Each structure stands twice: as structure tokens, then as C-alpha cells.
Image (cartoon, rainbow, N blue to C red):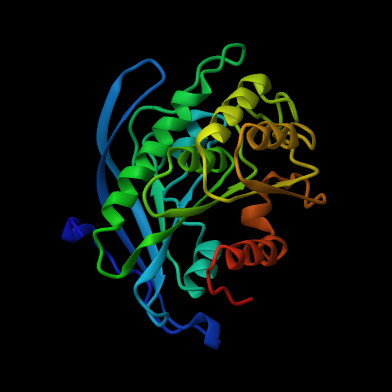
Length: 290
């Protein structure tokens, strides 16, 4: 795999307690990527990628690409730091996956301009914003598949919030080797303080997900909660129905309320979603232990 050696860092390789937590290895590298924003501007720069794997699980590993969400303001996007989702990444790594998390252009340590800007609230241009995010994962997957320790035909794409919709976008592109996709709380334009449960442009999102259903061919899991303060309990189900009616394959799981805002289920309540995700992955042919 082509990486810059100073940026390849094994940050954690100490033995963890319990047989299920053998040895977790964490690496970083910079990956040059190129995208186009909603206004047709081409942007090229490196992004930071974090990789986790358990070196006591058999290689080659299936790949799991995990995409982060999008803060409602520039300060929050800059404050992301480096995408890790360490608890979830450990869980997937302990079950055999090589987990790769891109910190996309415009966020945290990667920096750069906001290539995922979709315009003002009254006229959202969602598809090119998600395509800019998805294209970074397509380029990341091509790089990961050069590694000797990964399987070339067993990739799962997963994301949270904006990253969840990015996972659906990726599924619609049908990258070689991707066999399943998982969307946690996917959508855009939400603001739980300014306009709770009423995201910008819900009809545009519905049309976008319907268009994805026309081409996406891998099985998907869509996971939301009843008390999602970004999107509410009704819109996500409508988006999924539009996706499915257009030909998309998938299943919709709506969890009961969790915390003050169920939008953060993925990061805050892993014990709730892990059995559901494990069952979904087993049905896609993965050997997943509880």
C-alpha cells in the first residue's frame, strides 16, 4: 500500500483484557483525493485516514469503511479532529474487519474548504454534496485493496448521519467488492436547535434516495431512532420507502427513544445496535460473533 512512512503510525498494539479484545492496531496515513463540489469546482488535497484491525484475527480481513457525520457549523467541522469512533471501530475489528475511517475534506486534521456545502436551506443541492463525500471513499477503497491483508470482494460501507447518507450514495455507485451498506441516522440539513425534526429540503432528500434506489444493488440496513432530533420519526421512513420503491434492497430498523437525542445512537448506545448489525452481517455471509 502506498503510504508516507512518517504518517504510518501503530498507535496501539498492547494486549487488551479478555479474549475478544486481543490486540488492536491503529494506523494513520494521508491519502491524496480529488472531488468536485456542488458548483463544479474541482478540489484536490490529501485527507487523513485512520485504520484499525485486530492482529490476532485471521488475515486477509474484510474491509469496513466508516464515514463520520457533519456538524451544523464550520467551527464544529473544524473541531472534529481525526475521525476514529474508537469503540465501534474496536467492535468491528474484533470481529475480523479492517476498519478505515476517512477524515474528509473540510473536517478536522484534513482541513480544506467545505466541498460538502449543499447551498442554503431553501434550495439544497444534496446529490453533489454526497457525491463529493462518497468519491473520497471510492478512492480510499481503491487504495485499501492494494493491501495484502484485505479481501478484495468483502467490503462493507457504513456511516453516521451525513456519513449514513454517504453510505447510501456509495451503494448506489456499486463499487467493486462492496457487498453491504449500513446507514445510521442518514440524512442532511438537520439542526436540532434551530429547527428540530424539520431538516432543510426533505423532499429533495426523498428524491435523492429514490434515485439511489434505482441503481443500488447491495443489501442495506437503515437504522434510526424515534427521537432523532435532526430528522424526526417520520421522514427517515419515507426516505427509505422511496429508496425501496425505486428498486433499492434493504431493511429499515427504527429503535425506540434513546437519550435526549437518538441521532447519536451509533456513538452513545453501541450495546443497542450491535446485535442488530451482527445479525444483518451474518445474513450477508460474515462470521460475526456476539
